[in-house]
Length: 84
Image 1: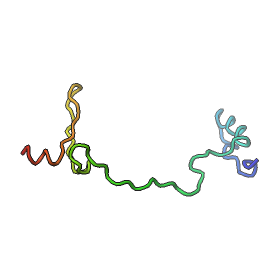
Image 2 (image 1 turned 135 degrees about the horizontal axis):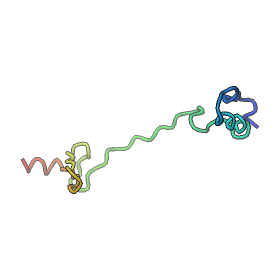
Image 3 (image 1 turned 180 degrees about the horizontal axis):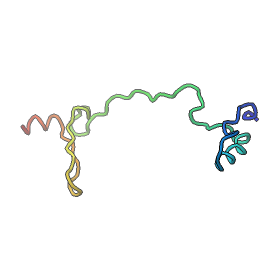
Image 4 (image 1 turned 120 degrees about the horizontal axis):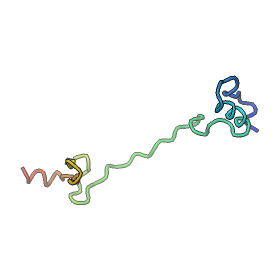
């Protein structure tokens, strides 16, 4: 077993859960998350375009609804320039 050569971090620690973890560590090994290796990076995506006007969403203004009965809405930049 690969965990036999790893030091048991639960040895000598007080507490009931540490006793359980100490007994399980030789069989289960360390946590599989964050044990090292190359960090995975997400691919860079192009900014998504609005279905209505085609501009990126970063150019839009978001109006948040106030209260529980008003929905949030997005104002397109083309519509904003004609509204003012």
